[in-house]
Length: 495
Image (cartoon, rainbow, N blue to C red; front, top):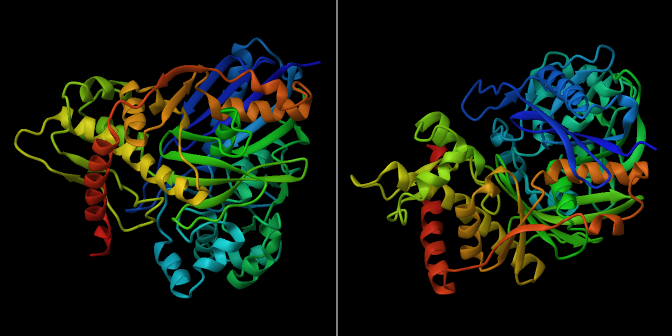
């Protein structure tokens, strides 16, 4: 029996593919960046065809690097940037408009209108989410309103909506499958997380034609075959990137928590088989659906984490590569009271202010690039701590351990800052590609490479542990100063 899994990891800035063996060890990787489009302030778009072309190319490249043929692959697992919204023609498979990316804020006014109508609690109790441009619903409504004849064609059943997972499965199966898994469906603001289906009340009230929507499936199951390869490969798993990372971190049980430091920072707390609805501006999301059983998580989304480091590299040009931020930040012992709130696209959890903007405070003539670099790393840890504090209150738990992954988690300085601010032990595993490995494990379960979760428990191992070194009093004082900076960033774009 084939023992290798092909994981397709379609992210916000690049498409990646990894080949994973039966020990969850990576045998080969391939990656291609694709173009980011910013047509107006607050707008972010991708080319769906470029996403597909890059993802298919790296899939072939990764298999070639591993000296494997399509027939050697037991299953494909797909993990993806979530909420990003595509509308396409069912007959031609051609997108009608660029993909509207999760970071896009063009529907801010529409969200404000829904909130003004008093629908916030209604949406939260059904979907677990807050009303925000981040999620797919208002992006889809914008497409239906702004593309000529789109609404009439949608109502006639001629169009298909999907997040990136749905788009990739459609392309892989040459239009045979129009599906999404429950984790991705739960990020659209249209999915009833208690009932486990598209919410008919929401679709009716917002006038979303049900025929647009994909069929919701388990996160780990055999759905069909990818027919674009020289020989067909079964598709065995779909999971949104953060839920895949939660699984890859071995957080299979209630109370376990992980933070992924990528373009944004995404923190998920496994809450078991009953949803916990937040009182502190977090979202409730599906962590996994397997064997028709829903599992849930509390999630806090920080919009700009690694993106803030990229800003230092690409806009300020004070570091040649993202990896150089540690060295520059370590060149000074402190930020000298400089605080950076990287609210480039507004603030996510627990603030949810789309009008907030990036703010640098405390600058003096003595402020150096080192101070700004250190303030940037600290801003990532501060934002994550805001979310973790809210989670602890919602779930009534004391945070003692945090599992971390993502590129920015390679920074020892950042991880130590995180341990200091939270007072929790931070565990960084030997395996860093937890998003891709997580969905590979889900695909391997459906393909029989692994028989049960027990087979996966021993595959997660810590590489380094960061213990808190800052006193609780000092941490509280620093967090209070940070919260003061956050308040000054809010509402800036309203003027």
